[in-house]
Image (cartoon, rainbow, N blue to C red; front, side):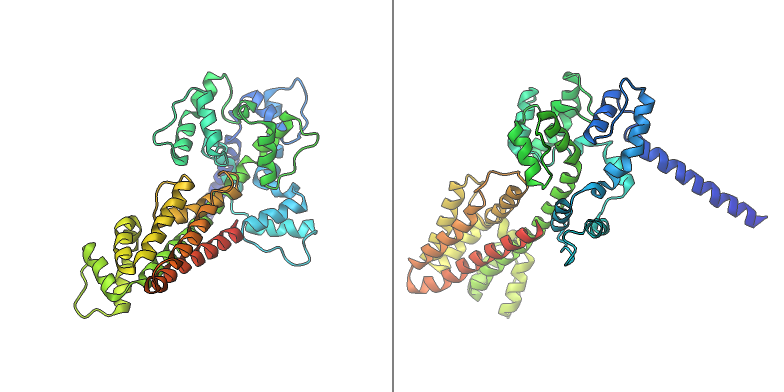
Length: 400
């Protein structure tokens, strides 16, 4: 009797889970307006009768949902499949470059989102649909809808403001917001739409009419958001490694006396008799202090390393100013790598990333003009900075 009860309980729980999963899968579109259902079907080239009953449209969406949302890669061509694998840091298996079935299998193995997660994401469109917009496009959206720009105006604050006001903007425009219409891209030119598709390896529809371009961008916005977030995560890892390399270069160039002076100046207790390797290890524990207080550290370093390093610091400052970045410190050099990475996903004006390379080159040149003693120490730092930039940039290129 006990076994029968447990068996019945297991069956009941399994049934509940199946019902919950079915409800969860429907939740993304079962409240959509009829025009949104028609839009989704049109975007995904699914024919539907006109006029049509709303329930019939919803059933059509349901029938085609998994193939287009949960496993969209099933319909990708070989070029896009390869592009996706590369963006995930995966090497295409040798000899399978044009084997679509094999490529689909490889993509499936690296796919990180479940069907339920993909479905649930359409309950929160505003959280991801703007991810791949440039800062100027976000600002244009706010301006068009008479929404005050945030202060200070950073990318994060722009995204936050757009997301917070998205539903309100849709309501004022008399538009649906769950699966947005063409209105959301009304400030994008046709060349903007084509560029967005090209940069992400998405075939541009032919003929490239505006409505087809918008449909293609909208259809691929979710996957583009995922790839963008993955790229930023990789860039963040590279930047962390770059921070470490830059601070290591500075610490390695300092003498024991300079290390002790820096520790004393920042309230870090140094036990008597501490050896050099212990001093460096102690300073590394406070690496964030070294970066956040670079102006003090740079002054200390320039006093000890001589005119070459001081002049190199000035060159870094001028290079940063020329690139219209926020300040002249080591973190801004790494920020240039972030800018370079954003260029790769279409979120920054081209050329901004050159400032870090220019800074390193200028620092090297400046060091060469110093005294013979300063040249030796200053070149040691600037060479490591240039090497760090090159190394980190190569890593970012691979990860993107």
